[in-house]
Image (cartoon, rainbow, N blue to C red):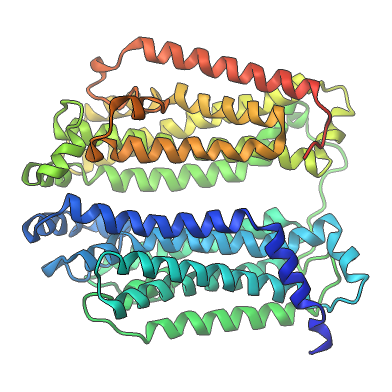
Length: 533
């Protein structure tokens, strides 16, 4: 055992060095998310009466599926509100961070051959996975500390705040253990990440079904690690023992991964890869078809997830309208542009889903960087495929996929609104309002492509535009910021309904900007060397 962990400390320092930018961003973003909730919610819901209006909104099957079991709705304090509505949406990013971190430092290292090079030195067999888990522990400990401090800044109860922080950190560790197991099963980092993320999605679905089945959650809820932190009932009736489930599952998955890793060779997976065809199918004869083939699983997953979320969100339209009528602050949010609260709600939802789909678009374009770094792009360009055709096909697929996801989201919100009591005509209105966001989404695609063409390493900075657009687009009216601040976002020029209030000029200008950025990306990529950092 001791020999198998040789040089673990060195690998921990190496991993922290490599992730010295990524980890602080992940940890800081989750901590800021909690700080934002603690700072803004008391501003929106100033009185107990306004919080009870919000409690009535959350007391529905759709809201329960998207938030939590609803403890404390009878006396909806700020702490209960944060636990019921925010904790889940901070635990999921912590889980995602842990999955990507562990796979990056285990299976990805083996896939690229770096693990074999490192193992040729005095390094133990299990040093790499243990080092990855230690780094995940450090990152989740940072999340626990920052979220706890954020809650304490709002004068919330110390014990309950600490429990929430530790619970979020332990949830991340549970999925770090899951990723350690999936990294033993397959030869490819992408497959290992996909399997672990499928477990995250399954956990969310189990929690949603279980929480909606019975008040306070049912037996099905307890099958999901994402439910355990809310089942601790902080700020309502705190109980610590559900935390032991996270500790136990983490121990079981880590122990299982340790046992599995001793049964395979370095670089190999326990599940043998499926042999492909000797010749590629005719459907893969074009770069566009290849881009679709490589991203079809992600596209299907995003489509299903967005549709389910959109239907659940749309079904809340009636309740949100009633709540806005009783809360001046909610009216300020949903009627910011002189709209009716219902129209304002649908406009906000269209903006929200457009931002989500823009995030998908960025991840899709950033796959170009991965293709270039792994040498796959060079193999494709060695054939009768020009650089212009390759990148144009990839960006074309991303644009088409984004349009499809907008269609799916708008349809889901419309169907959900109809199930909540709205007329059938709302489906077409919401659908068109959501599709109208295609030009700003393509602006994001073009910006990412332009950065990638100039220098692949800086393409990740396109995420800043999403963060900026989300913050000022969703909450700019509440904060009463100058219009010029919000207008810098390409998404801010369409957040109005009904449809006859959307002007054509912003759409035309955004389409022109998007085309210019796409042209810059294609031209700069054609003129630089491959595999530039």
